Length: 182
Image 1 (cartoon, rainbow, N blue to C red):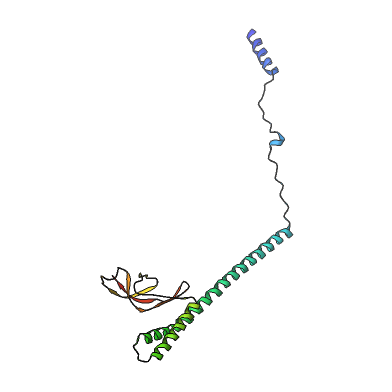
Image 2 (image 1 turned 90 degrees about the horizontal axis):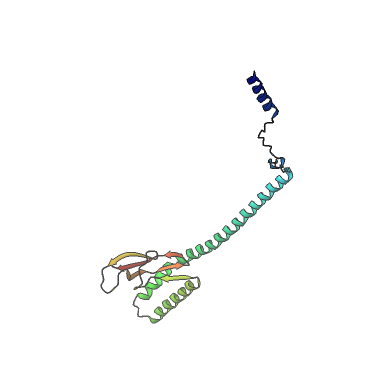
């Protein structure tokens, strides 16, 4: 019995000794507070939508205005180029008339004066005349209709000009028709 008494004493000692349990309590301040949801005002939503729509309309109008200004400037340049293109046959005929031999000095003087006036008009309109023998061949400006093997001309040099080229600003109205030395 002595063993039983000792066992009972142990059991009672264990019952009377408090057991420390590990409990973790979450403090109230560390919990994630619920974010207050902002109240959505339907009038504010409608105002923002209308404001955004008006900004878009204003931007579209500004783009339209800029595009029409560009088109207006381009149409003026295109109209000028078309007018110059229609006068080119007159220039070509005057140039042929100047190259012909004639006995009438007054006739020759009249053709020269007419040609000079036409060139002045072209210059006033901003027309550039290009394509002269000795210039370097540029495929963006010249149309090579013939090639010639020549020792007196350098390679890719214009040897002969059949028809002058004309350009208004950056727009080529007519390419120069040339013979290029190889």
